[in-house]
Length: 355
Image 1 (cartoon, helix red, strand yellow):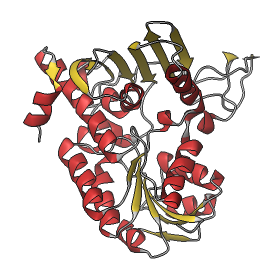
Image 2 (image 1 turned 45 degrees about the horizontal axis):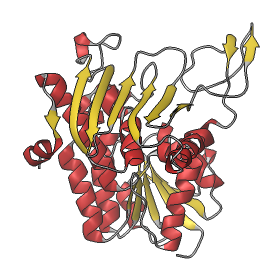
Image 3 (image 1 turned 45 degrees about the vertical axis):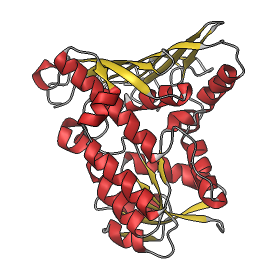
């Protein structure tokens, strides 16, 4: 396809800012149009976008938009994906893919039926630090991978929609645990066959966030086809900044990654400064400020890759397709079922039951 690839962003919030920044850095793309109902003019002004609309259907049908970037609250993902697919546009969708398995399957089907790419924006698959870890694994330095432990944890969501399951789909294990769930699947390159889950329970049962319908702490343990094990955690009870870490254990070695709190810069300040890392409440004392946080988390490389898929007519890799977003949701919801019943969930049976 002829470049620049012209992107239409649907949404004007936190995720939209991340994608607008990444698109600005991408040499083969530009933001052509934005759709939103809140702070639209301010967003367009900030990112120097000439055209805006309050109706995402208008954006999806616009002949000058090549790819629709879905950055709305999760409960709006399905209708935007369906509108974009009906207009024949490729789609980049923020995580999680949808709030329910029914909506996720409908979104994937809409893209498949229309013959367009539905690309799942999992930034962990593009974070330079984790890409390097993958290279080491693929080289055989750790031998056969036996067990991977991964987490994303912080003090609570940016979004007001995260408090209601109707709008966000679940609690911390679903909403931010989707990053490690999907990445561990991506690393193993296999399907999950069994899941065990445990959560704080949601609402009054939560440790801290009693006003969140979903859990503020959750873990899932899952088994892959070759017997390998994954352990993931997502919580909203962690103070001191967003903590994303990965540990990989194999027959010949081990590897540990600090994705968010591993800056090579160490600062001690009695008075503090403006910003170090996401969700850190104070910059007083010892801190480790990120150098280019969005790059480190993988957003610009992610967008560069997706734009390249559109430009070159290629299908996205395993881990960042619509069906991968769906598969990660299935693992999270299976963990919820396990937490409710106290039983191990067989994924084949779970998928059959939840068709």
